[in-house]
Structure formats: structure tokens, C-alpha cells
Length: 288
Image (cartoon, rainbow, N blue to C red):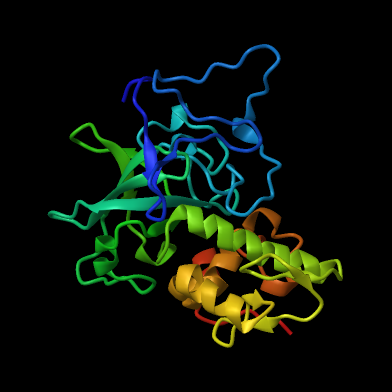
């Protein structure tokens, strides 16, 4: 890829491509020439991010270039793993919008990160092992979003750089594109923040604030000011994500897990607690 190429994620609901973008904190990905240069009045934002907007913190939801490089650990920033790579140093998840199925000898997908980087993922799992949190047929649903917990980069024998994924249980596929995920995840976070601060919550469809809102009877999380708004939301966004809203909320709170510690029971000190066992559970959040 040259610095003249335009990498884009296509939003299925829009005519124009979803363009390459930088993080809201100022971090930007490699320009294609192999390095990002920072002037004297700019800060290297690769190591830190203060963004709390849903799924937009580039440390918790990183670009492909920031992932630990298992092929050449000396070139990797020690943000996610130490060189011995035993346990991750923090919770993080990588998002890829599926563009096409590239399965041949092994299952695989080609897609784009939320920063617009082209990424290939190949699954090197044990034969006979089937995924519990998604289906191989989900790779055919273009525009869906694959989420991988704690992935690493690897240079394959043919020279391609991608993700070699062995643990199927640390993967999940949302039935929506990244653009919609971010929008719906932000509504979930805003709803929780309103509860913490005793403020009125906004309708998930029209954004009007009311003291009392209707709650989706299925996910128990989406809130609406009227049945009309609920029907509109169901037709445009909520139908595809309703059964996955619990998982989306758990993912969205990762940059602020200290704030949500009691509600979601995250435990950083338990080395045996693998986040995927909890974040990808089918149990609904206790919203009482």
C-alpha cells in the first residue's frame, strides 16, 4: 500500500466509503511509508489514550499496527504484552469489518480495521474444534464485525502480515458494521452514565430525554420514548443487534472497567479469569 492509496471501510447503509480515520485523541496510523512522524509540537499518542467514547479508545480497541508482533517482538511496543508474552498486560479487543471470506485450506476473512487498515485473519484451530461464539457461515455475511480479544500480528511464510488466530473462544461476530456498533454502543454507555448520575436517559431512536422510557422486552437494555420509536429502531438497527446488546455493552465498558467493576465483576487480579468467558456470555446484564 502506498501513501496515495485510499483505504476505506464501506458502510452498507451509505453510498460513500467509510474513510480511513485517526483516533479522537490525535493518534493516527502509519501513512503507508512505514512510519508516522511527529513534529516537535505533537505528542506521540501511541502509548496512551483518554478517549471514553464507545469503541473509540485506540489503546483498548487498537489499530492493526499497534498489535504485538509475534514474528519480531523487538519491534513491538510493550502496550499489550511483555516479550515473553504470557498474559496480556491489559484488556483489549481488535475490531474488523468483514469484506470477504478468504477461506481455503483454513477458515479466514479479509476485512478492514476501524482505522481503515486492510487485515487478513486465518484460524489455526485444532481439527474438529468448532466455534462456540460464532459460526463459520458468519464469514459470508459481509459488513458484519469480527471482534478478537488479545490478538497478535504475525508474518506468514508467504510474506503476508496478518493475524493467526488459534483460540476460537476469544472471537465473536456482531451482525452489524463498525459504524452501527459504535453508535449503538454509545447509546448503551450514555444510558449507564445517566443511571450513575441520576439524569434522564435518552431514547435510543430520537434522543429525546424522559424520566420514564419503554424498555426492550428482549434485551432489557434498549430504551424508547414511544412504541413508534421502538418500531423504527427495530427496523433500522436494533433487530440485528438485540440478541447481542449485552455483549456489546460489556465490550464498550472495557476502557472504564474500574467504574463498572461492581456491575460487571471484572477481575484484573485473577490470572485464571479469561475475559472472553465473561464478556461473551449469553446472560443479560442485571439492569434493576
